[in-house]
Structure formats: structure tokens, C-alpha cells
Image (cartoon, rainbow, N blue to C red; front, side, top):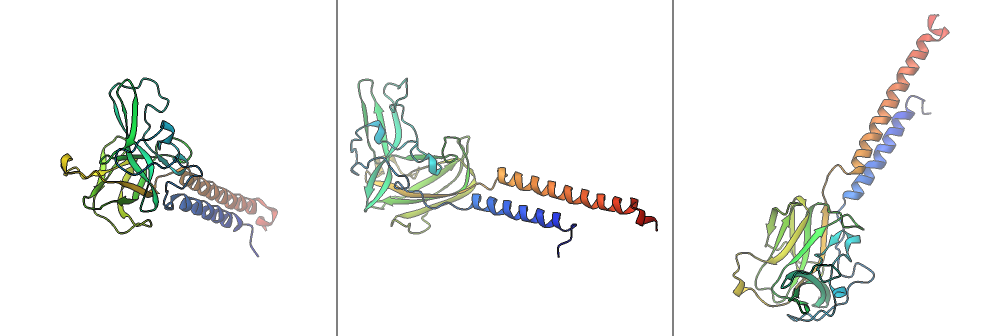
Length: 262
């Protein structure tokens, strides 16, 4: 039989366990996000260097924001004030070794027309956002599954914080990815975005013009005091205060009851 004095304790433990489980689920590592992780991914284009991209709607931009990934926007995708003679790094979907990948692309504006095409070598830039929007967030680790054909020169994963400062970089592979590519894994505090490109030490004239792309991205949200953690602390404090007040009230009741003077 559970006494009245022990109920508040058990209730507080119940809520603490529930909130802890929710916090753990929120911080759990996500599965690989791939180009096929959304119902209607952008249409795939050919994988050869300088393959034309028909329209701005074929670029990869915010289609994967629901999965926490935002690709760079290109001003020709409906934005006003396109700079004349500008070159913008962007991305498109293509297929390598039987898998759809995100590949680097360029959008070039010369004032009279706009060209969009795949571009090797170039770079991919991605930003982490709160799922379903464009609000920046941070992660504590990121893993990319890179398909690189042929794999003769290393690609570099560079992680940055919200200020654009580099918080870590890596070129060494950590193994084979689920799509047959090489895994690049980097852990650091407050990763807000990352770039994938040829290693900075490789001279531009030596960089390969061969297809490469990202078949999947996995990441771990930063272990910060998110609303779950704050709610857990609040529930615990309220439960403890209620239990303390109940004990004090019971003690006062016993001291003032007629039976106490007998």
C-alpha cells in the first residue's frame, strides 16, 4: 500500500523519467538524410562536368529543411537584385554508382542570361536548421557519405560555427558508407554549417574535374539546455516544492490536532 506521503515522490520521479526520455530522444543521432529522403526530390540531372541544369526549380535549396538541412540559395531563384557577373555556389541532384547524390553546381549571371550547371571541382555548403524552417541551429557531429569517382584526391570537410569561424576540419576517411562511398566524420562544438571541397593545399590546376557528390548526411544535435531540459528542471523543482510543503503541512496538522496534547 502506498502512503500519502510517498505519492508526491513517486509522481515527481514519474515526470522526471518522462522528460528525461523525451530529452534523450531529441538528442539521439538522426539517420542518414539522403536525396531520396523527401517525397518529391529535385529531378536528377546528368553527372558529367558542366551538365546544364534546366531551371532554378531544379536546384537544391530549401527542399530538405524539414530534415534539418538547408542548401545555399541562388539569387536567380526568384530573388530581386541579381548581381551582374556573379557566380554562386549551389547544388543539384545527380546519380553516381547507382545512387542519387547532391553534387556541386554553379549559377552564373552575366547580365544577359543565367547559366546553371554542375561544376567539378567546386564545393558544397550546407547549413543546419531547425526542422521545418530556416532558423539556424547547431550540431555536435556530422558524418557525410561521399561518392568520389575516381577517388584519387582527398576531399576536405570543414565545419563552421554561426559566425563562420572554422571549428574543425578533416580529410581522413572513417570507413565505407552505406552507399559505397567514404565516410568523413567530424565532431566539434556548435557546428552550424559545413563545406565539402578539395583540400585547400591542393593547387587549383591539380584539382580533378571528375564527378563527386554526397549520398547521405547524418548529424547529432548539440547537447544544449533545450526546452526539454528546462522543462525537466522546472517539473523537478515544482514536485520537490510540493512534496516539502505537504510534509510541513502534515507536521503542522499533527502538532495542532487535539490528539497532539494528550
